[in-house]
Amino acid sequence: MWQGLQSITDYKRKTNPVAEHNVLLPDRLNNFFARFEDNIVQLTRPATKTCGLSFTAANVSKTFKRVNPRKAAGPDGTPSRALREYTDQLFTDIFNQSLSQSAVPTCFKRATIVPVPQKAKVTELNDYRPVALTSVIMKCFERLVKDHITSTLPDTLDPLQFAYRPNRSTDDTIANTLHTALTHLDKRNTYVRMLFIDYSSAFNTIVSSKLIIKFETLGLDPALCNWVLDFLMCRPQVVRIGNNISTPLILNTGAPQGCVLSPLLYSLFTHDCVAMHASNSIIKFADNTTVVGLITNNDETAYREEVRALGVWCQENNLTLNVNKTKEMIVDFRKQQREQPPIHINGTVVERV
Image 1: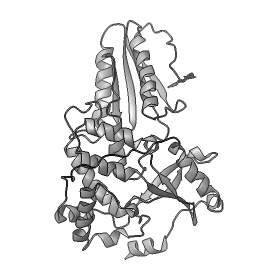
Image 2: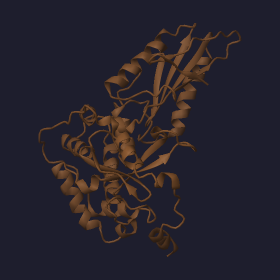
Image 3: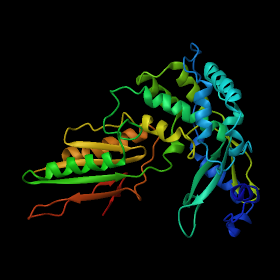
Image 4: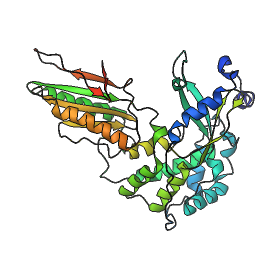
């Protein structure tokens, strides 16, 4: 009962008085979050056979019962608590119709963006992180689709992408990185350079057409590829700060932060970002990326070429390296060390930590 009263009354809801009284801020933020829409050509795909994927009422019921009753309602206003009972049959039919037609209802794609400050003192629009409140119904639908996609991923997927792989976790990512580095450091006249990559609004810059092409190279069902494309295209979005709501915008680029599918889509989008030299590794966990360069006899040629190649890959895939937040670390246990020249990205020196 107490949880229900809290949900109804917004008890102890935290507010930002300054932001709430700025009626222009929601529109400014909405335009800022949608800044990657410029010059993006929408992809029209040919019709395919009906998607072979479908869900049973038991699948849907199990997913709905996992919904946290305290979770905030999305733009459709449907409370999470109401979905836990007696809805499985209705939404089973809707979900399966959506899959068979490779089309997602617009009401499922609506997103209300709640800006979350990333700093104690906000000085610019980039200090806000966009978190999407989406339909709880769609989150359940996405969870079902995500489970299917992860179960059908091929063995050829980059082994150094540790997210959404069976029997892998962040611990495995760290263990692999340490093992690679320490094994190399056991050899004579060696050291390791690690570049910790930060992308600017990584999820928001995914180009749908490029993502679908990569899906096809992984052997995913073309009809399901069309469904994912439709899910990402023509998404109505507003920004809400307190009681102020922006004018809606329609987005065709990116995968909203806060959506269940977004981290998986990003992981698959970057699956072809792999090292070109045997002495380097590009280790990934979703949007966390580390370039590990194993240096011998002070020869950094391969490592520096790898960093340049990564920059080219980012340009080709519409991803922007945030040089100010990208950091580098050098691990050198030699008795006679020498100062190593810094790494430059886009003409800017990468800070060493």
